[in-house]
Structures are given as structure tokens and as C-alpha cells.
Image (cartoon, rainbow, N blue to C red; front, side, top):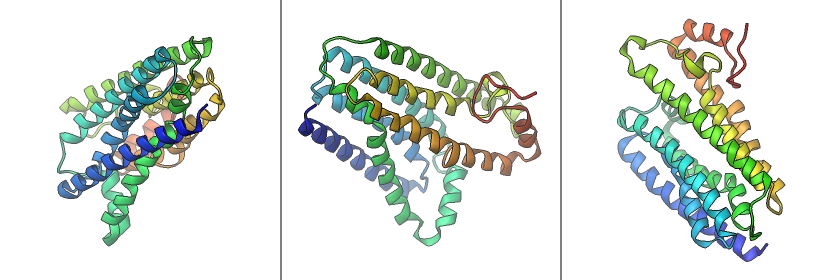
Length: 264
């Protein structure tokens, strides 16, 4: 593994993501909506994948497979978020409105650092991608095929959960209600579960490459964020504020995370 290749790829990726997030932050100032950061956090992974596809020295078939997976998954999620955010572009998502309120008069400056932190998190979470695309072994192994299969399950699962929630919200009769149909009848956050499973699939794929065990950092970080920081805690706090008793009853009936586990 060539250290100079690693440093160059990481550097190019970090530069691209930071520049994109700086421009997005400027846009967020103009429209007063920090929620756009989520869109471009997702799109930054395909950007990294394109950089690696063009510049990484690994086996071409492996690069095409991995980078194709990342582009499809990141593009799908980013577009899903864009559709949601752009419908209410001038109305900031409550989660970010609350953050802005908590940060007070220095909110915009702190947001600038927050956007850059999101860019750097893109690069950190891309560790499996760097490992995989530096692998020059001229054939794919069983772990790489297993990772691809797991990725396919995760992308289909997440897309299904997102589609079910979007359909529920589209029905005016459901206004103010809690989505408890489909996968949402088993888990309060099936989309988060499959998102984490996707990062697990990249880890499995990376195990087929030298130093692949280091890729565990990505699903570990995602799991921590989802369970303890910006995922489930923030989402459920907002749901409790807006849906109150209905959401409390929903919490009692469903699993917080794993979609196939349902409480009695």
C-alpha cells in the first residue's frame, strides 16, 4: 500500500468535501435553512467515490463495483432528502431550528464549523472506500461478494422504508399521526437501521483487502451517531414534541431500531 497514494486521495477528497460544504453553508445563510447540509452530506460520498474511481490505483473491477455502490446509495439518499427539504426550503427543519435556538447569537459562526465538521466526517467514514480502492489484487473474493449482497439488502430496505414514510405523509388524512405501517410497524427507525447495515456492508467488503479490519470505524461511528447523538435521540425528541401521547404509544409497541423485532 503506497502511503503517498493514500495521502493524496484523502487530501483530494477532504478538499472537495470542504469546498462543497463551504458553498452550501453560504447558501444556507441566504435561505436561513441549515437542513440543506443533510443533502450534500449524502452527495459528498459519491464525490469521493468518483475521485477514487479516477485516481485510486486498485483493481479496476473492484473499484467499479465499490464506487458504483457508493454512487447509487449516496445519490439515492441525497435525492430523497433533497425532495423533502426543497419542498419547504424557506422553512427550516425543526431539528436545526432548535440547534440554532440553542446556539443563540453565534449560531451562524458555529454552523460554519458544523458544516466543515460534516465534510470531514464524510472523509473519515470513507475509510472503507480508500482501503478497497487501493487493493490491487486482480480478483474479487468471497467477502467482497458477501458485502455486495448485504449492500443490496440494505439499499432496498432503506429505500422501502423511505417510500413507505413518504406515502404515509402524502395522505392528508394522516396529518398529525404516527406512521406505523409497513416496516414502520416494527421499528420506529427502519431507515436508520438499513443505513447502518449499509455501512456494515462496506466493512464486510473491505475485509477482502489488506488492513480491511480498519473499516470497522465506519459502522461503529454511524451506530454511535444514530443511537446516541443526531439520529434516534433528536428524531424522537421532535416526535414527542409534535405528536405527544400518540408517539408514546407507538414507542411502547415498536422496537427503536431493529425492524424485525416487535414488542408484545
